[in-house]
Image 1 (tube, one colour):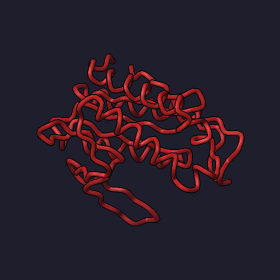
Image 2 (cartoon, rainbow, N blue to C red):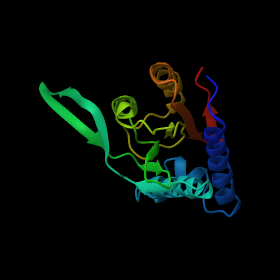
Image 3 (cartoon, helix red, strand yellow):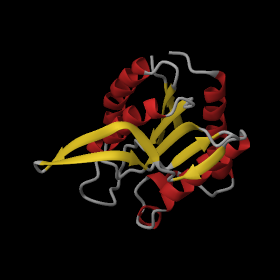
Length: 198
């Protein structure tokens, strides 16, 4: 499905911003490789979120960090036999227009996000979209690398295998909400990749 020109501008701006940080030596593959210097202190997440916020500002959006986003209806989850009802979540970044209307929701995930955690975020999007009639785009940006070194034993080395399951769910989401651009980007050793949603 073809995304709107404004969403394509945002994708281009995010790529450009990340490339500018790489050129300055302020971002590199070390940040996403599991290097303890960046992984353990959480610098990868904060640096990438900072770059995305900069890209949003460059295009005139207002960016909020961890703004509460309400669900249209509660999300019911079962964990260890117990029911948990969620009414909202706090995405990494929320884009607002000059009227402070929510127009975009952005989630970035570092290399330690397990498949279950990644898929859970897609459910959050599904429950949030109907609550925001002004919503124009959802951006999901996980780090999907093929690692030589793992910072923790439980982290998957080959994270590229998550591309197809994520894409499959995002296709369903796009069909449910054709007026909202559902954008799948991922960060790997080669930079930022745009995985088109048909």
